[in-house]
Length: 116
Length: 111
Image (cartoon, rainbow over all chains, first blue to last red; front, side, top):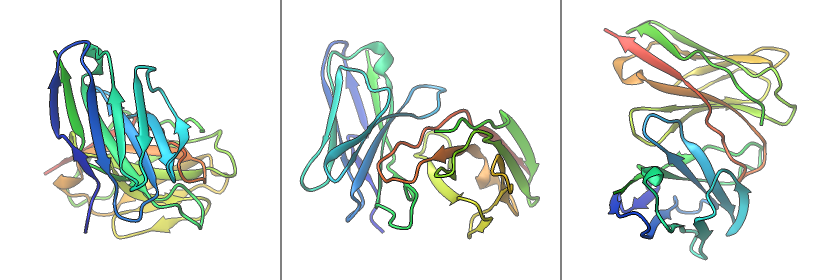
């Protein structure tokens, strides 16, 4: 079965550079979530989109922005990168659960960003 | 979202049941209890969720107390591959709302 696809899997950038991460949700899933997981940390929610509109916002820095496109894929743009942005970035997708509940989130394998 | 509290770590012998507790004393009526796990550096994996009733699937069972202030995830026959960090999350019912991962329980299954 198709899973959530994230690209690139690994990315190395210098401080103050810009990075873009891409996420392709499971077909027919309408919701995308972005999480950041620093070394030894738990996943931290950044932002989510439902039907291409921002749905919820967490601890996403102002230097970061994201959007969901008409084909439901999503991109996370990170500018003025700092050393502390080095982390695993996970994307997850879900389908609106008409029975209630956010439904099962399916996570991708993550994109590892290293800022030097 | 309601705050959840879990033990930092637990051990379990292979083949035995692993019982992972979670306290969520401030959970509201429209918040579900979700369990996810994360095997080292992989994306978190959904296990099970429930609102009021006990739930069971092919992976685990979820026991929620009648007052909904706590729950227990049961892995009936733990294997070495169940070694992971287990997260208990209280989350609202609308799609798109965040699942906020707190401090989970690091479960070590030993031979």
